[in-house]
Each structure stands twice: as C-alpha cells, then as structure tokens.
Length: 299
Image (tube, rainbow, N blue to C red; front, top):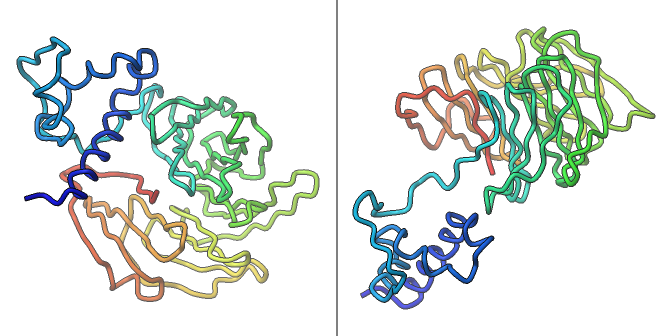
C-alpha cells in the first residue's frame, strides 16, 4: 500500500507538471481545466484519481502516453541551430543563443518566451547569466560581446576588443567582470562598467572551450584539447594545470564550483566531483545515445 504522504506528493507533482504542460490552454480558459484530464498520461496519479470521474465528454482513442515524457518543454522560436544556453542561478530562467543572431530568454516553469534580444550581426556562440540574475552576456561570431538587462532585454553594454569570433563568456561572482575567449586563443577579462573599463588580455595554447571564475582573481580555462588551466588574474600567469580529458565537445562547471561535466568527441557525458582529482575521479559515465552534444550546463 502506498503511504498517504507519497500519494499526495505524487498528486502534487502531477498537478505541477500538468500546469506546465497545459499552460497555454489554462492561461486563456482556466475554468475549463477539467478538460485536460482525458489527455493526462494513463498511469500518472492525477489521471488514476480523477480520470474515471471525468465528465468532459472527451475520449482519446489512441496515442495517449502512459507516463510523462522526460522532455518537460520544447522551446520554439529560434530559426536555426542553438549552440549555447545558460540557466539563471535560481534555475527559473534559461537564456539561449542561436545562429539566427538572436538571444532569447525563457521562463523555465512555463516555457514562455520572456525576452528577445537583437543586436548581433552573426551567429551567437556563447551566453552567460550573472549570478545575481540581472545581466546576460552573449558572445558571437561578429567578434563582439554584448551585455543585456535580463529584466527588459535592453542592451546595456558592448565589448569590441576581440579580433576573432568569440568562443565562450563568463561572469565573475560579483558581476563586475566578464571573461571572454576567442578563436585565436586569447582570453580578455574586462570590467562591465564601460566608463571605467579595465582590460586584461592573455594568450592560451589553444582556443578556450569554457571559462569560469573560481575566485575574484582566479579563472579556470578549459581548452578544446581537454587541458584545464587555472590563471591568476593579478599576475596573468598559469598557476595550476589539471590533467588531460582528451578532446572535448563541451565542458562546464556548476555554480558552486564543486561539480563539473564534460562531453567527449565520442559522445560520453562524464560528471566529476572535486577539482584537483577531476581527471580521475568521475562519478558517472554514460553514452549520449548516439548523439554528439556540443553543450552541457548545470541548472
């Protein structure tokens, strides 16, 4: 017998999922919410509890799912391939960049499009969310990094110091600095305050796949070849080098800087704990079902 608290929990989970799944209909006709019951997965707790009592008059003849799909949303709006995405720190927002030159901001709970940010003249290659959730940065093949107000979608800054297309961008924890890496193998660290802008530039052996601040003066640089470097930003010197993960398609660090994930060229998704032993202490390794992903991120 299922404990009452477990059954209530399952019902609440189903209610939340049904609200997200049928939000477009509920938002315009909330009093007709009972009509969604026949379309619920047959084995979900909500369907089992209320399906037999439904009086909607709707009968689904075929094609009804047994369980909720693992895919919570399909976000539609971009008109091309999307090579980059980033969650806000609270997981409530998702920003995406596309080859259609547009940055879009989405509500994770509802799948609703919140902002459309136009300004780049070439494909978006990288996006980042500031930790306080107020700013979004986007790097593109047009060699610029643009900074946007996340609440309004208005561009509030632009950096044009790169001579090659941008590969990756990252905010410092306080949001006062942005690091950006380009295809030429140069990393620029610059202040978001354009009126008092300071810029530090250093070269790396290969183009950067990922950037992440682990302190106000330390930046982790992951190279496309799988080597991970830690730079001291005051002396502009490499102070640590960690292993070699092999050539990578994607790499990212969790906001707490304790969890990392990589995608290899063979399609393996590997998650690591720790930093100094990350080249040998992974906790999971799974093939990506034949697909080669070029982006991975933590919520």
